[in-house]
Image (cartoon, rainbow, N blue to C red; front, top):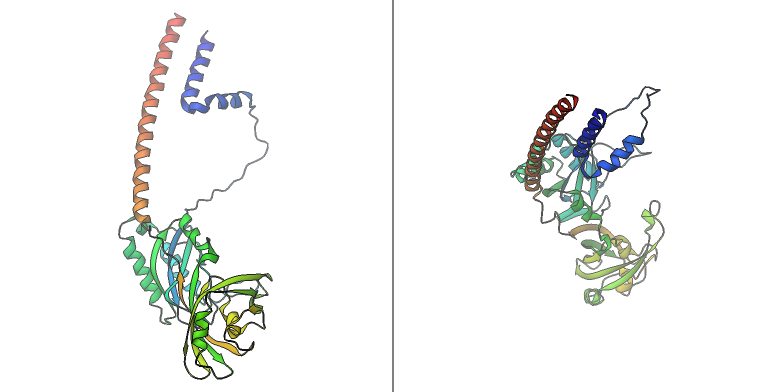
Length: 349
């Protein structure tokens, strides 16, 4: 009788601790046979913080600076020798992160400047140890200080703006709908033959125009050979002299603008020369600048600091509720044991 009563008491305590899944756990524990280990167990524990994401825009004023690090056989290039490194190094140092990942929205060639409001980017900081500055309302001021530190580089080749903290879902926006984005370029072009006065009107009237581009020869070593259909939405030209003109155009993201101008040996059709009723190879490009990347970035909801404060308060309140529930559960079990002891005495007597 006493054994059955103790077993009944154990079952009640088990059900209290494991709740709705208690029956499942009970059958698992009942059928499981405990065996002594035959080998020594070795294990390691690694604790890492969730990554944080810092978004913003950058401008590049150099025609000799790559966007990402160059290296050979997996080795990194010269430290600080790229746009990504110059931005990421400051953030890694400030937040005490182990490493970082620099993700821009598209890319520009090493000899192309990024002007205007800048190109959107996000830096993912892995295992950042010093993040307390992002949990307060003045986090915007702190991020502005970091932007000023990046912009204070004596070389004056990279400038960032609009730094803000975003979450992982917002960071994915950079890679969503890449081909739907639009970009505005400015190109200084050269013609082998004297320009006619009506070529400007011809260009403006032929837009928008669909073009078909094979993978550019200059990137063929790292990209597959494909035919890409792209759109030139508008073009405006300004004559500099009889052989030079400045071209502004808005294109679909992913357009090879250099190849559109010089045709890439006829691999882009129609090319700029064809639209001007000239022979292939008559027009070439001397300089190219990106004026704008049309994307709302950073997102309009960068109040991650306020969200962190709110989540922290919610977690604290939930922890308090759990403590109270645990306290009452303990009292209940304690009283139940006392009652059980009293019943045992009564049964024995």
